[in-house]
Length: 142
Image (tube, rainbow, N blue to C red; front, side, top):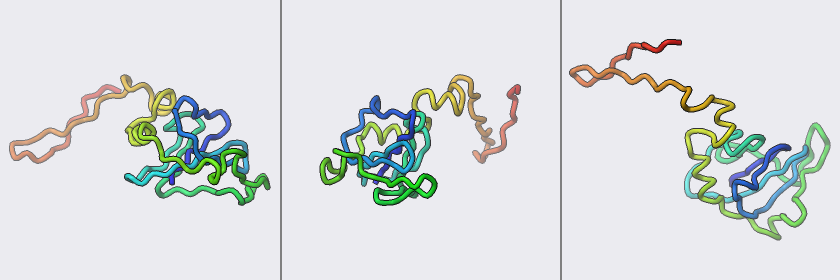
């Protein structure tokens, strides 16, 4: 299972996600449930956009029927999006690609890591005659 958790301010419409089972959480927000069995998917935060988290391999999620401990609100299936009405869709391949990419897509990437052009290139080790890596000298100016 892969859960796309959308908090207030998050929007998955531009991601082209498939119609699938959807639940309301005990706070404002909702999550979309997908199947994915091809390979492991890591949990992420904001990789698909602001206010969007992904719970997958190694993650946990609270399902409908549970009560939120802080708000006392019941987690519920969103009307018309219950799994017995719409099923649980396969996670679209383009979403898998986004989740496997090394950097978050869009503005979240620049917010957390700065523009790619502003990051210095990694320091490569020097190779000696015996091809064993040696520490490189850092000649960057800070």
